[in-house]
Image (cartoon, rainbow, N blue to C red):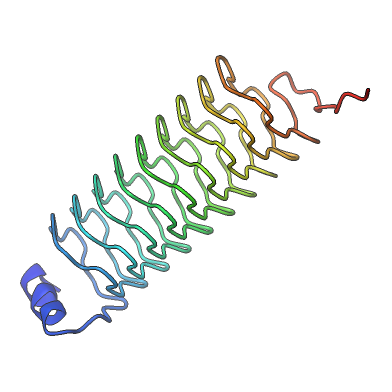
Length: 213
């Protein structure tokens, strides 16, 4: 499907574009809130500065897509493929990314406030300076991810894999890291005030022990 046809049908009130083939499409700055692109093919698409708030992108393939500065507030990206996508400064507040493939994605300075990323694959992702306050990342795989200077206040990282992750200068105040794997992670300069590490494997490989009075 070409850009002109998609925009024309959307303006006429159509919202369901399930399984549409939009590979390499250019939709920069398009205004498409609440569109249904579930299972759509958007590989290498240019979606920079697009408005996809409350859009349905469940199981969509967005591999290597450009989504820099896009608005994906409250969008559903459950099980979506975003491998190597570029999402610098993207707004994903309250978005659902459960079980999404976000390996090697660039989410630097992205806004992920209260986003749901349970069981997401984030190996080697770049989340530097991202805002993940109150996000849900239980059982996510963040091995070797870069989270330097990110805001992870009150985030749920229980049972996550943070092996080799860069957590330097990260804000983990009141975060939950119950039974997380932090082996070989870099926590230099991190704010760990009131963070909960019960049962976590610490950077030195030792199991975190709660000190008793």
